Length: 51
Image (cartoon, rainbow, N blue to C red):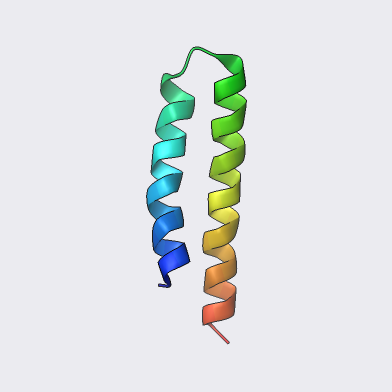
């Protein structure tokens, strides 16, 4: 796992937690978008690493 993937895994968990715990709809949307971005980074790392 690269440094980017390791960061993304940790950040993804924090973003998910923020989305669950926030009562502000804007914060929830932002956290959900950042979660999707972190998932994409991890997925891309797996694809690049498997070559």
